Length: 186
Image (cartoon, rainbow, N blue to C red; front, side, top):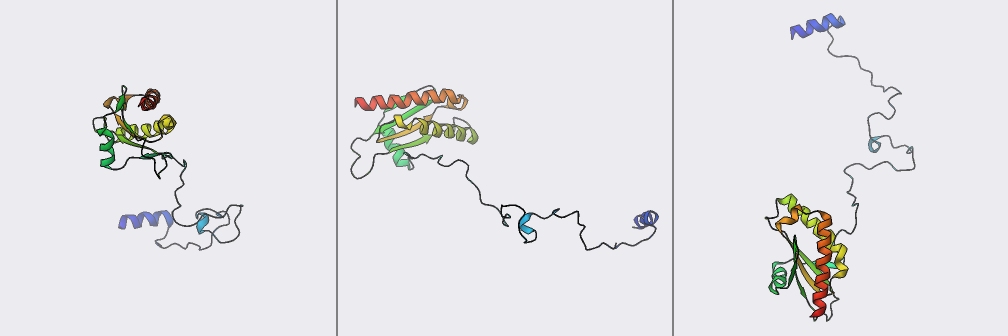
């Protein structure tokens, strides 16, 4: 401590550890350090109101990324019911298991339901989620080609992780139209 004090004494000429700092702010620091929410409550400088305090709510940039007419298969029982019918079409990276319900009708409106099956053989969690996102986008793009009352399970083969989006796009288009053709023959 002595060495600091002696160094300070040499620099300033006095050992005064408490400086006299004025409480007034200079006029040049008009909007310097405080955000608008903490500033004076006088009239805002623009037509935009000042931002509120606290965290802001999140804004969803893309609305409607979930299926509108294609609902999801959610329970294990629904998946097994589709797989039990043993109707499927496949391509290099995708297997589609499907069942068409012509007699479902009744009081319910016709609906398409879809489930995704992406096993750990496809890759790690990041890779599986990427494949699922791609499948959802492609299913939404080509859902109009499916029959009205159709339950569908899209199963990814391990090679789907390395397939390009254009390749998956062509495969889904071909498979959905194949499901449509096969359901018309029945």
